[in-house]
Image (cartoon, rainbow, N blue to C red; front, side):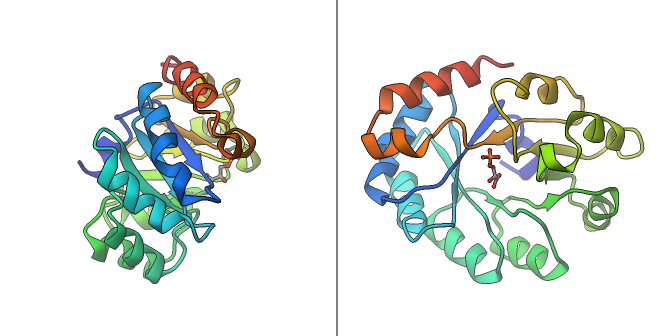
Length: 206
Ligand code: 3PG
């Protein structure tokens, strides 16, 4: 798998904030059962790295990656934990190099044509578009597709079950990401049936 093919594995990538690493395995199983095998665990909580480790070891059908990679150490620790991909909200030359050095496929975040061009110069053609809705949403991404047809995006940030179909209809969108599939209250309550249902609805979006 490379970063470009990562965009084709599922229409929606759940972006997960986990408070408790014990929730990771049942959560991942629910998402996979609902039809969403690609899971981004954000490095925003101390639970994230152990959660990645457990999902990588115990849920073979899941493709688990790390989100919110903002420093070299994040990229290194996530790769060591078994992350199959890395996602960053934005990108700098140092962060791009750090992610590339891990050998793990990565999706760097961009919000402008210049940022996309800087990564294109390095041969990176699969990008996260963040924060999608705040940065201009569907019309903005459609406009980027004119001069930059070789770049494909995973928009995240404000993407919902309601607006996801509009993004997925764009030729330069491979998949979308969002937190709506894994509400914090459902995770805290261990309501895996609800999460599986949300995943099933999202998997049917394309
Ligand atoms: C991200 O890091 O991609 C965003 O936090 C997604 O968040 P949202 O789906 O809640 O907008």
